[in-house]
Image (cartoon, rainbow, N blue to C red; front, side):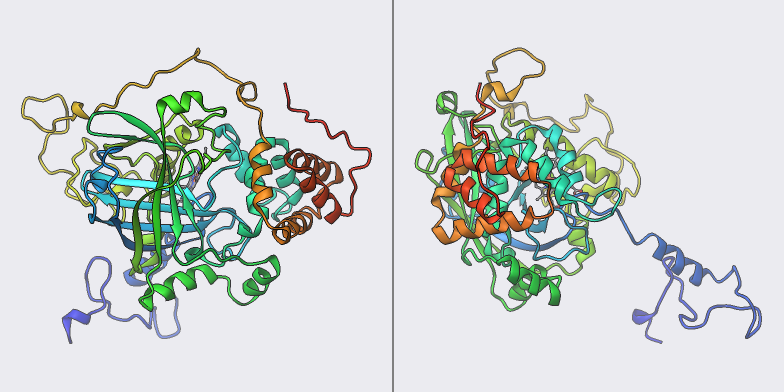
Length: 492
Ligand code: HEM
């Protein structure tokens, strides 16, 4: 027999039969000594790992990022060090609310997670296809997930809870408007933009900091589905986005996104009339224009979905010299949340898995732990400081101090900024009359099962963004504004 093709147990011993289990006589009961049968059943029982608590359904691909413009005056990050430089990367796109087997063409935000294997470590930019988010304090995050996931009693999605929560947070209107708009159901992952969403920092060779936002603009063009088109697609194909991405790459049609940054100096940030670290707001492009940086292309499908996509671990805490965080409270919480989730979902040594491992040498003092599968750093020292130079930390990379104001404690952000409706109003006015009409109808359809007082709370928020927005949504719901108090309840 060809030994290369020999079927073996996990221990490497040849499997005698994969068709007949061992029994006491031809018609008798099975034997406990049938190690192959027991191994097979036991492994099957452990095939499942926890899915991501949100963004569970996703698609991934490998690719290349290329620098097209010089931004070294803003950052010393090696990935941007020269025009033409290429860096290997991995991307994963996802929906948020659905479980691992959910349909792709759902009305939902899309995750847009990028991992760049730079020569100074992995940089993960874990963004979405929307530039803003529902709120600006991470205490709301678990509640958001509870309302977009299944109802604890009915095990069904509960529109009433979902809208009760969203409309109880007036700052959510910006994101809700995007999700209810034409962009709420991208045709596939190739046809949407991506955003880092948060404000991040860039630090240059002179150790100067600027604030930045990242934008990734699809070169395939934006294409969306209407609710009716999406329902028809889901009826025939629950994997429409996975199929579209996978098949395009197999055909050699590599999807591409152009990368841009917006840049704000610390001085400009201090003078801005709104909080530059508020994730519910965009920076206007007129004030902070898009600066071209590069382009990425996805050009290789993973060989194995579980190994490379399901086990991929993206974490905002994967950051490299020249790039850094901002005081955005949401980002600050995410710096903790992801690696912690992955230590639970994949295990403490998940960073060694091939898709997650840096492509540059990495030498921590982490040792041991479940499923340590590299050499555990052999006989190198496991403590620091030591007298043998293993390993030297890099104090020259310390960032410039960030000046802060105010005392430590709970700060009510509503006192800082309660302008919830200005940006959703501007977004509404950018839409054509047809787009606005579809926004009204989609909102009415999505809110159909919701109690009237919640509908009216949403209508008021829309009205405060733009009277035509409130009136249009009310009309589509078969309601009028008669008798409603239309003053802003949130002004000081
Ligand atoms: C996934 C937490 C907000 C984008 C996840 C996961 C956690 C998490 C725990 C699962 C990670 C894993 O198991 O691998 C949080 C918290 C947030 C927050 C605590 C706010 C306080 C956001 C925001 C964005 C975002 C604002 C986008 C701008 C994503 C994406 C994924 C994800 C794209 C999936 C990553 C992948 O493809 O593996 N989030 N998240 N999240 N989150 Fe968030």
